[in-house]
Image (cartoon, rainbow, N blue to C red):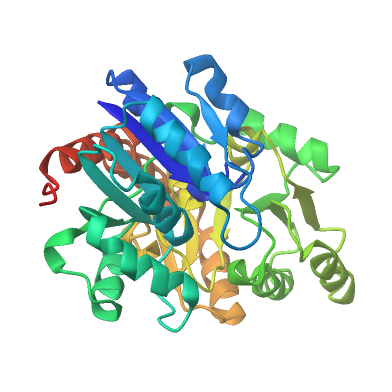
Length: 371
């Protein structure tokens, strides 16, 4: 099949990483793929050069941009697109408009995150109007599918849940050597226990709550440190918070990194303090590294972290509960290791990109053709 993925851009993020891994899997299955970016190409686009997957940038300007739509339409036609797979709302309605009158067999949209619809917004109004040309709407977890079904006038037969997947083989399990290397890089004593998290530094990820939990944890575990991987608008605020709580020598803001898989192998526990999530790539990567996890019970997190099995679930906006769960895992290393092993076994079966790609392949085949 000739598949076109339509996104806003390929800047670093969970949605963009999922699209790139899905394209890799589809190329391996023998499909011919391209990506159209509504705005700029993005920092991850060059990863696809080795696969000979073209990435086109429409460079849409503010408001209605006919030139961007014409370029998108030319790319769709030149690729002889069979399957048009869009990602999130704005990319979808622009792609539908650009594809009108073309002989495209299926149009599929994936709503990443929790797929929440703000019904009063112009973006969601346009998205709903574009559904007449849409064969299937996919959410990235069952919780998001139920939420979207309740919030929008979408026939249940058009709604599917296909969890995200990752390339499991990229992630080796945590080991003593990696841990020693990370502790040394941070300039910490060899016995320091490391808690880590990965995510954009934005309010939805609530790293402020995680830092507060860590400060409380330090009262009971003096030999621990917190590693925050990712960048964003809240970096300076978080740095200021660490100074106010007197943990700045034990909280490390590593910024945006290309070696996340290596850094994860050096951790003892993974933490995710999000206020909202869809189906977290960061949690999948932690599972693949065989890390025990403490995560907030929001969105699709409970579909990845089974409380008491491969980690602990705590309420959002509850630093005390987060600190208690982290204390529990750090205080029982044997139980924590067993949780990590169970997480790795689950991810190998359910969280791989090959599993995700096969599910999309099946959906492309069965999504009802439009009249």
